[in-house]
Structure formats: structure tokens, C-alpha cells
Image 1 (cartoon, rainbow, N blue to C red):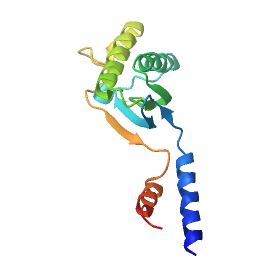
Image 2 (tube, helix red, strand yellow):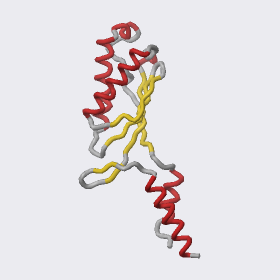
Image 3 (cartoon, rainbow, N blue to C red):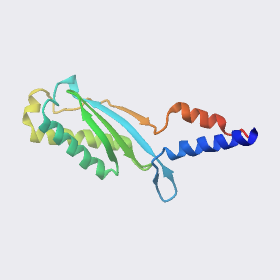
Length: 152
């Protein structure tokens, strides 16, 4: 019975570890993904045309490449942006987000002057943002895995 319990735990451990899409550094193996949300200042409706939305996505991908960040997905609502990004342990997130918001605002104001009519003071984005880590396995699966450590 003890042998079969160990086999099941080994199998579950293998399944949990195989669910990760791992990246490698010179001395590390990791997977780091984030959900980032930022909203337009004053919640103004800005993202109401495909040309603005498409250009914002292009800008975000360009900026992200400079920070060694991979954009997994990004979508807009009328007044906010959601991004799923994959980073490295070396990524300085506050600098990345600051650059992302600053460069996208500057370029969108230059390329789409009509946006300025809805906003004032030269600010496209609210100064705050939401950022959370995401996992490739559920929290419950991780808890079970951690709790099972040390059991025979």
C-alpha cells in the first residue's frame, strides 16, 4: 500500500511539473507570467476604433521586446488595457510598466491627435495600475503538492 501511495505522489508530481512551460537562464529554470491592467485617465473612451487598438498593440510589443518581455495576449476595453506577459527574473517590472505607459501615450498622442480632445494635461494613462502573477497550475494543486512533501 505504501509503495502505491508513493507511486501516485510521484506521478502527480510529474504531472504538475510537466504543466509548466519552463524558460532557462544560465543558473535558473523559471516561468514568470503576469496579468497587467492599466486604465485610461478619467476612464475616457479612447479605444473605440481598430486603428488605435491595433497601433497600441504594436507599440506594446515593440516596447516589451526591449525589456525582454514576451506579450502572450493583450486586449482593450473602451478605457483600459489587459496584458498577459512573460518575463525573466531580471526584468525590472516598475521600469517596464513606466516605459510601456509613457511610450504608448506619447506615440498615440502623436499619431492620433483626436485622442487629445478627450484628455487634457498630456496624460493618457492613470498613474496607477494592476499587476498580479499568474500560474500555469492551480493554487489548489500547488498546495496539495507542497503538503505532500515529506510524506512517504
